[in-house]
Image (cartoon, helix red, strand yellow):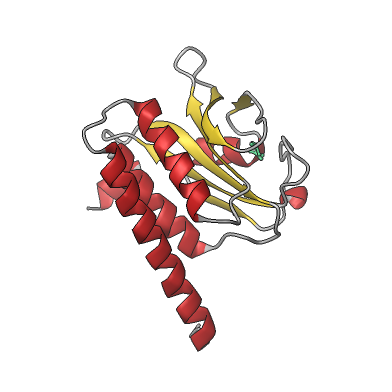
Length: 174
Ligand code: SME
């Protein structure tokens, strides 16, 4: 469906904002191989760049308990420590390997409410260079329907750039 001009320019503004923050992140993490340092940089710069980002953080696949995600670097109020695969938005993103955009978290079956002020969220899987899932990036907003496909594209590009990863099916298709 064709977009109205205002929608188109919003999408362009958003894409430009993501490209700008992607360049900042790349400059800061250049030469820094440690995963936690790279994740901390991503959360700090994204949450500074976008006002609607209320909680921004990583949940890592726990090497000792690979059926669970464990909290990693984040910006925002206290987050839940662990999320089982398949539970809540993060668990579904981890299990499916697909980005989840949720306009109203209260309507999402099994949503884990770490903070009742969050009303919408996007969760993007993070893949390493070999296509293995290493984490998910969870961004919550107090606004409803705060995230769309442009956010997904912007975040997926940043995560691929920083963690060198591609979804296994993207690799197979190329
Ligand atoms: N909302 C998430 C849980 C993590 S917190 O929001 C920080 C979910 O349902 O996956």
